[in-house]
Length: 162
Ligand SMILES: [Fe+2]
Ligand SMILES: [Fe+2]
Image (cartoon, rainbow, N blue to C red; front, top):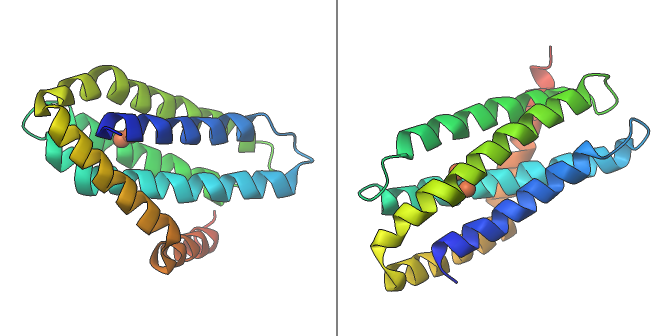
């Protein structure tokens, strides 16, 4: 799979989790917790493989990198807000929907503008980069390190909850 295809497949996972989360009711607290944790894990992995492998590879062919980095920071802030909000809080769904809108905007911009620019790298590089993205994605998903980072992040967010 080429790099853009790997990332688009993962975008579908991210958008699907947020769509499911936005479709929950206040009574579905366990489901909300689970979907929120799943989304946190996947967005951390996604941002990491892009920041570590994909963005550095396209730096010479895409002028959109600074915008993309700024949007990752915005997503980070909105994820932090969603993590800090109790799942049965009246504002929870509104915050999920704001995050969903930012994630949609960012992923569509990558798919419609940045990924077409990345094709300048050529098919062979994109295939090779796609393999590395998938390998790193699997590694992070399986790694205790990533689980630890997520647990720590959740604990920190709970402590700093307003
Ligand atoms: Fe991104
Ligand atoms: Fe992305």
